[in-house]
Image 1 (spheres, rainbow, N blue to C red):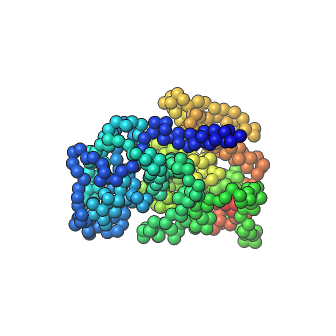
Image 2: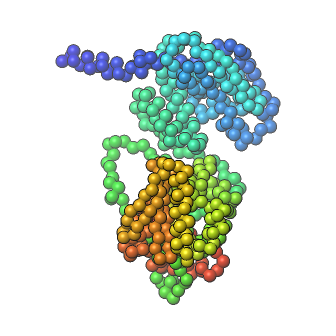
Image 3: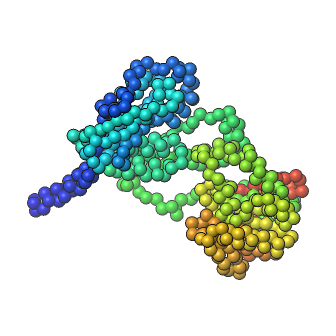
Length: 472
């Protein structure tokens, strides 16, 4: 029995140290311990005068974008890290010598031969980067310690990239978790759930925050709060048992008793629990789109923690095959009387079910125009396939690509043309049309707001987010 236990322990020990014995070699060195082949590291013990007048905000920008890094031959994995694991191992307020002394190079490779590479460091005046060629002749003697340094540095590297809120957060988080898992540590992964300190707001951000319903929703729902790691011993709670929003609904009947506003023709087919954006005309829609492209998009990004342009408008134009090209702008006003855009959720940036509804007095011409767009897309990309079928008694047709970069379904009835990127969304709209679910037109709150913002007054668009939408 004891022999069996010893054999099992030996097997487990062999599994634990397998990453070290399987060909991976680890190195952990201070920068001053590297052998430089072209030029030595600078021995500047005083901070450069050029950076003395740089303000704090500019310092942070330079420290974020002029981070030291290393590149080595042979595909080895290498990171630079400060011993105290600070987010920025190199600081402007310190001299070059202090920054160099506070930085280590850690590496994982598969060869014992001399490894050559280049170390890139900020210049003394922080005006750019300078390269220093180096070589490493041998790996660390204590491989277990060097491996621990490497994995900790790798985790810190990807955590710091994740904290920068740049594209690739999911990949950075995955890499950090993989490194942490390989370290065989038992303490909770607190770094993944550490609260982020909000960035200082500019005057422009504060101005638009005052008028932003999105900011109020984010703060009240605490969308930016990280989930806390809990113990597996704590009791689990079924999602079905959660009550959701319990705030009492507003009684709209008393305030709409004598109101009879002119309602949007397309409101009769919009599900009551979906947001909708009404446009009184095709010209109003193009005006809003052009204004958003020119001015609105940068402002909308202030409400998003991600700062890059996701090309959301272009992606949905391509997916739905509804391009606002010159011909569309010329023919649209004569074919389209009003429009409505609806969907199941507001996450357009990452991908959402959307439906565009057109009220038209010339259904045949508008339908033919969209079908022509389908044919043009298929002629340009042979991976786009035709699709057709019947849903709730309504025939649909469309075009679909396997990766859904193109996905458009077309349905027509009476004076309405519907284009959507989702059969689920199509079914929801058709249920509203056939009376199988409550419609926006029947809601008292829609009546109230349509009376406040009358259709016969000058209007570019009207956005309706119902109580049922928020609760869902």
